[in-house]
Image (cartoon, rainbow, N blue to C red; front, side, top):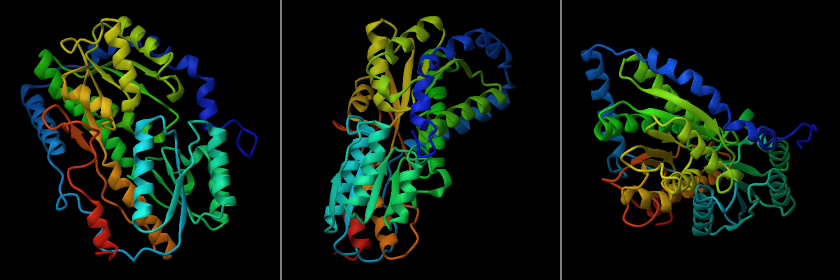
Amino acid sequence: MTRSGTPSPLRRARSVAALGLLVALSVSACSQKAADDASSGSPAEVKKFTAKVRADVSAASARQSAHTNPVPASAPRPARNKKIVVIPCSMSVEGCARPARATVQAARAVGWKARIDDPAGDATKMSGAIKRAVSSRADGIVLTAIDASAVQGDVKAARKAGLAVVCNMCGNTGNLYQAVIPPLKENERAGYLLGEFAYVEAQKRFKAPPKFIVLTDSEFDTVKARVQGVNKFIADCRAAGAGCTTVAKGSYLASEISTVAPSRVVQMARSHPDYNVLFAGYDAAMNFFARGLQQAGLGQPDKAFGVSVDADVANTQMIRKGGFQSAAVGFAFTRAGFGNIDNLNRLFHAQHPVDQGLTGKLIVKDNVPAGNAWEGDFDTAPLYRKTWGMQ
């Protein structure tokens, strides 16, 4: 419960979990109408649309560099004797754990004390972690993938107590967080890019436009923004007469991705055998959904493929080997950790945080890293140390 006595956003989401993916079944009655409404555009319109999409995919897949994606050029020297607490959504979720560990690494690089307090995805424990940070007299808190709306009372109390509070991959209700990396619009862009990739890949693989199953986890504003992005692409594609359709929509919770959600996804795929693209909100979920589909004989790459966000280890391996997932938008989480520390340091010096320049990259088979998650195309740690006057 929140301080007002009303259910927290995470608990409200759980109260409708049983209905989430079942909503997709109601979409099936509309899917044929959606296909019928996707009128063909003129050859010139479709050609122009396709050219733009291909250019966007090429640009988003290109190597990032210190020139194209620079870190802040100047900053105050690191404050001394600071103590911070890092609170991820759950250390069992790779997309939460990687930036949390990177933030601790960056904090220690500037001589600060840092520790992780893992709430393991439990809203009550998230609240408790923030309270412990305040009671331990920490100077700052960095959260990862915990929206401000889920812990707003505790964040208000932490800021009133004088702590600086920033977040990585978060929604920011009421501007409670003093900085968010990356901006929420980058998550919408990630969803749009994955829609564009799906269009190009479906044309290449199936000689047909993409027919999407779109899944979301409504616990996270970032995931909702990604879904908004892919939905916007589908709308733009339809407006151009290029034939994109959504055959089904559904939702799931983070607590379900390794238990009941994969079987629901399999049910959806069976109910919509004409689908050829599965959009999932983040890679940890996609990993389990892909396994479920493959075990059910529904995950053959010549029939359909998946797209998602994070570029986690298992997912990049799947992309590299030509498995069910064909693309991910990755964010350089090591860089995000240093960006979190840069923004905290600015706040400690009574300065405003800045845009840390973190943008997503489209990871596909042609550019997938050799053996690990994608952590960026260049090492930002020495660049930040230079910015901070430590070299």
